[in-house]
Image 1 (tube, rainbow, N blue to C red):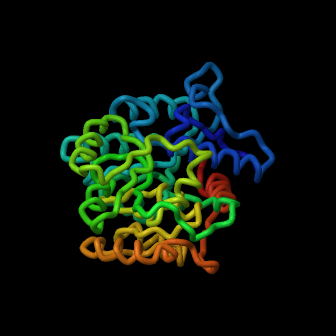
Image 2 (image 1 turned 45 degrees about the horizontal axis):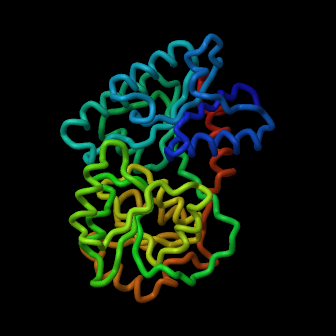
Length: 323
C-alpha cells in the first residue's frame, strides 16, 4: 500500500491511548510488511514524516487543553495529519473543563485531514458539540482475546471496576449498589489529579474497597479472570477500553445501559449484560449468586479483533483521506 502515514506512539506506556496506538501500529505493520511506527518526538524533529497519524487525548499530549491543541496545530503545519480522538469531551468533564476541552478538540479536528472515533456514540458526541472534521471515520476499539483457556471458577467473591479511578467512572455507583458482605476491587489506580478523590472514596467505603494500583499488562488478564463479577458503570461514556479488556479476558461484564453500551452489545452479541442504572443492585446480587453468568459463552461474538481494526484503518487511509 502507498501513501500510508507514520503511526505515532506516545511514551507513556501505562496510558490506554498509548497502548492502543502501539497495538495498532504493530498490527498495521504486520498487515503491510512496512515499518510504520514512529515516536512522538519525530513529529517536531528535523525530519518529520510526510504523513502521520496520532491518537489524541489532551491530557496525554500537554498539561492543558490549550497547549495540546497548539501542539497538534504545530505538527499539522509540517506533516499531513490524521487523528484518532479519544476521551471525547462530554458532561463528565464538568462546567469548567468542558468548554476548554471542546475548544481544544475543535482545533485538533480542524487541523487534521481526517478524524477517527471509536463508536457511533462518539461521532454523535462530536456532532452535538459542533466538532465537524473534514472526514470522519468510525473504527471500534478492538478486542484481542487472551489465549489462555477460560475457566468459570473464581477464587475472589468480589466485584471489580477496571481502569483509572476518577469521578464518574462508576465506582461510587457500584459501591452504593453492593450487596451486604460483598467487596469492590478497583483494578487500577487514580487518574492523574484524582489521588485525593480516591483516598476520600476509600475512606467512605469503610474497608469494603481494595485498590490494586496500576496492574502491569502481563498480569491484567489473570486479575480480570480472578474476580467474580466485572462491572462497567461509567456515568458518561466516551468509548471504553475497560469493556474491551474484560471481553478479551473472556468475561461478560455487567454494563450500565446507555447509547454506547447498546452499540457495543449490538456490535458484539453475547459479550455484555446491559443493566438499567436503577437495577444495578439487583444485577450485582444475581451475578454474585451465579458468577458463571459473567463468562463468555462459546457463541459470543468478540470481533472486531485487532487485525480487523488495522484493516479498517488501512482502508480509511488509502480510500477516504486526501493526503
